[in-house]
Every structure is written in structure tokens, then in C-alpha cells.
Image (cartoon, rainbow, N blue to C red; front, top):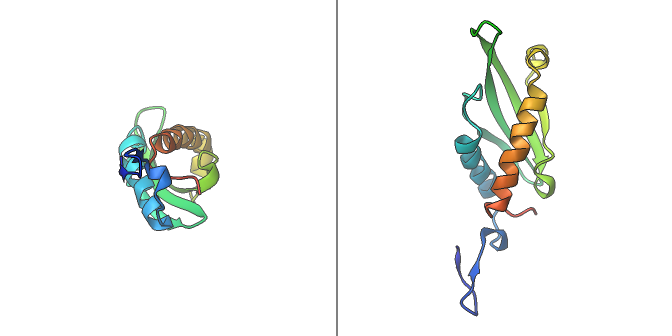
Length: 127
């Protein structure tokens, strides 16, 4: 908990104002530990944070034979007040490979689960 209120009760992070960059960096740190591995082998990076947060990552594709088949770089963008409703966008030139591996559904399902827990753990307010 952050600190004691007037009556000795603790305030959660939801009640403490955070600037957009601090919220974005907290989200990236959380994603780095919870949404990593099984193809999500890159590092999460904060691209922008304001009314929307935009983070980027790379997915390491693997074909049916178990061989690596290159990387797909992508961003996920969401509003802070509806964080689980992210929008997946592959980087230029990676769209075809993203469709072959059906990454949009995979990434957004993982995203929704991760950010639901992020908000539930009082890591960020939905401002």
C-alpha cells in the first residue's frame, strides 16, 4: 500500500495520481514479467503514453516443423480507461507473417488477460 490516509487506512495506487509516462513504464515492467516467452521473446517497450498507451514487442515465429521462421514486430495500442480492448498492429512488412501465424488473436487474448490482472492488482488507474 502507498500510505496511510487520515483515518489510518491505506490508499491503493489507483488513488495516487500517476503521470502517463509512469503508468506506461509500470505497464511495460509488468508485461515483461507476465507476457513473455512462448514466442514473445523480445522486450516490451513503451512507444507512447498519454490518453492511449502504445507498447511494442516482437514475436518469434516457429513453423510446423519446429524451426524458427523469423520475427514479427508489432504494437498494441489501448486507451487507459479500456485497457483490455487493445488494438494489434504488425509493423510494416510483417502483416502477412502475422496473418499466417494468426498472431492478432493470440496476442490480444494474452494482452486482455495480462492487463486485466495489471489493473486488478492496482498497478494503474483507468484514467
